[in-house]
Amino acid sequence: QVQLVESGGGLVQPGGSLRLSCAASGIIFCTYAMGWYRQASGKQHDLVAAITNGGSTNYADSVKGRFTISRDNAKNTVYLQMNSLKPEDTAVYYCNAQRALPIGGVSDYWGQGTQVTVSS
Image 1: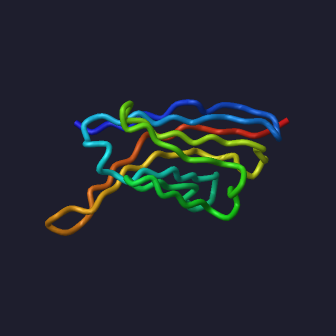
Image 2: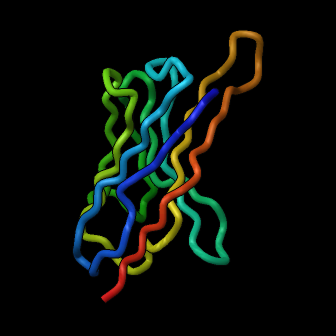
């Protein structure tokens, strides 16, 4: 059974920091690209940051220079370090694991989400 379990969300003041973690089980973690998505109330589900199994990263323009994604394959965990947080970063953050299948298609898994609220 595949599980992606996020943690680290919470309430933080503007300008503060949080680190999200996503612990994966039931998959060969090192073969998956990992990503963080977010969904604010009434808005669409957007990619925040992603990291390939080789360690290449990409970020949404709105978080570049403030957020850092990283992975620890020994711990089957992906992280999202969020600095200089803004009220507009408030959302539910979801972890995603994805890889292409040899036979075609995509293997795609999601965590349950963790709430991040940036407010004074």
